[in-house]
Length: 125
Image 1 (tube, rainbow, N blue to C red):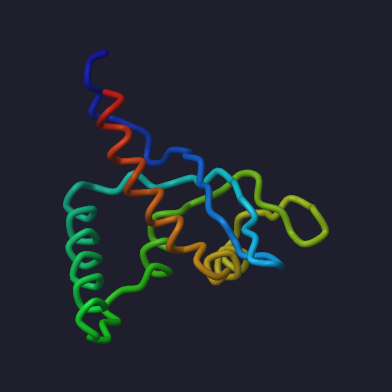
Image 2: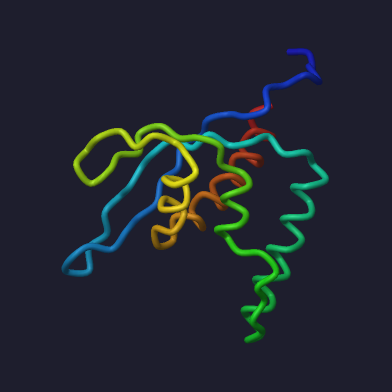
């Protein structure tokens, strides 16, 4: 397939993460995130900041330059298979996105999946 410079500005990718439930069990959660296709320059900036954050945390340094929630907020632009407590589809909007990203460890899973999707896309090509 020939390279086409004019690509779509977003793509869907499955996200899987686990949440703790009773009796030391974990429940598998799956949904599909719609990710923005960021320019490589911005991806490099985020990766550099994220790597610095990891090193700072390992060295006991509090680094609040950018959080997983900040990164997830920048990269996610929609979703599929996200429901409210009653099982109704949760529409994508700013209010729901804020609640969504504040769910424990979800923003981290979104960011990890985003970067993994970039690597997997490279491998597939």
